[in-house]
Image (cartoon, rainbow, N blue to C red):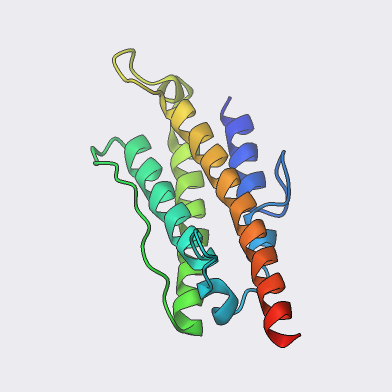
Length: 154
């Protein structure tokens, strides 16, 4: 089961997952202006990146056995290229840490204690599904941004 979970996490964070292109492709060639642009009723790509990182960190802590409180977190976008690079590096580092934590789990630990609402395996698959959902939103937001720019220029 561990190999399948790792593949699902890697594919989602990488170039292509089961549903569409992965996170690496969703945020490829992303500039500061585009990352910070917000559609009329939605979040910016940068906010999506920060949101994905928040929940990835939350799941990492949970599978490491830490108790943590879940909130609907939408950390704000930054304003500089250095900040965008940090946000992307944070995601990459969190993926490596999550991967390492999964590798370090005993196969029985993936099933988790019977008293837990969700097993670590369920949390990890939920994290990948959540990330996949936001990847779709990122692609849509980027498309809306390009349309917005064309209208402004045209």
